Length: 111
Length: 115
Image 1 (tube, each protein chain N blue to C red):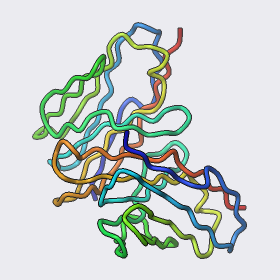
Image 2 (cartoon, rainbow over the protein chains, first blue to last red):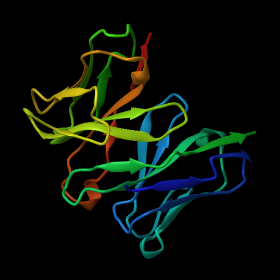
Image 3 (tube, rainbow over the protein chains, first blue to last red):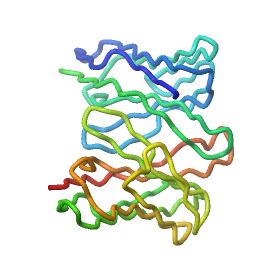
């Protein structure tokens, strides 16, 4: 089946440092997404990024589909960035989503 | 802001008992999903639905049933709860209308503990 591998599993940053989270997947499936899970549990979508580079605020996602990898760059980290980051690929060929999630990267940003 | 509401927020159930988790969305989305998250892991798809009165099996449907009585409501039913079903359950919705709308909107989750 589809596999999604994330690295590192966990990361501790000093506030202000940058982070690079990696996601490797086993197929050339498109519709890759990045999600953020708050420490309290709520999940929010960060990027829908099947290919190329997208930016929002201090976050940048770059997906290279033919190399089966995506990265999430966090610049100038803040304590509020703490939480778990998931990438997921979508196996569905139609309009609904059948996501396969990686195991996540747990990020802790300390003052 | 799209809204997906789950109830209850947490529940303790006994082994062999029946559990119903409820999800309500006000997004007018056609697609709804139930995911399960185990501690330290990502989410896994249990059931999903793209229209009322119809549900589809996801990757781990065994031991779960789903019900979509209306566009807004999607329930997950554990007829005979087991210890292995202790997890956090997330409901989500999407409209699936195109790449810009691939975003899933998640509820806050239901923490289920089976004793």
